Length: 207
Image 1 (cartoon, helix red, strand yellow):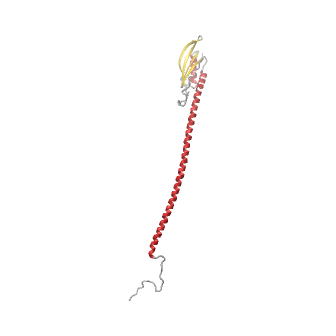
Image 2 (cartoon, rainbow, N blue to C red; image 1 turned 45 degrees about the horizontal axis):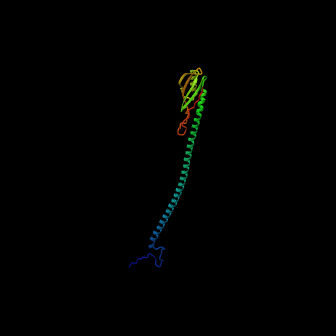
Image 3 (cartoon, rainbow, N blue to C red; image 1 turned 90 degrees about the vertical axis):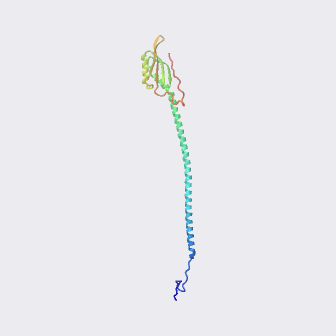
């Protein structure tokens, strides 16, 4: 008869015992995997929450900066509008000042251009056009006066002699003349909506 030792141990040897029974090992492994997965998910959730907080803080900061920039932009626009308004006022003031200086310059030019044997009786101005009436002792005095006006630099060329007629004053024959000249520079502001309608005619009368 043949005997087989199924216990594979010597008689009298102690039996090895496991801390975790073999039937519970698979359950413990599954539990460990579950706990590891839960820890990983929790860590990832915490990371996402931290990122969300950082993004929300960045959004709040960006919105605050945007409000600041919008306020600054509004101030810049207001400053530019004010600058434009002041520039327009200064331009208008300069135009009005030029308009007030124009008659003085005109009379000064005429006074310096008058030659001997000639005097003026009337002066009319409409925009840039000036009509000059006067008396002279000779036709040459009239032509010399027209030449002086052309050389003054205030009027365009040519200064036109409209009429010359002979008349008697105090038993003396004189030449009655009328000239027309166009000024080079504007005599009135160009912006009619912001300036007076135009200067009143300037007149000088004499004998």
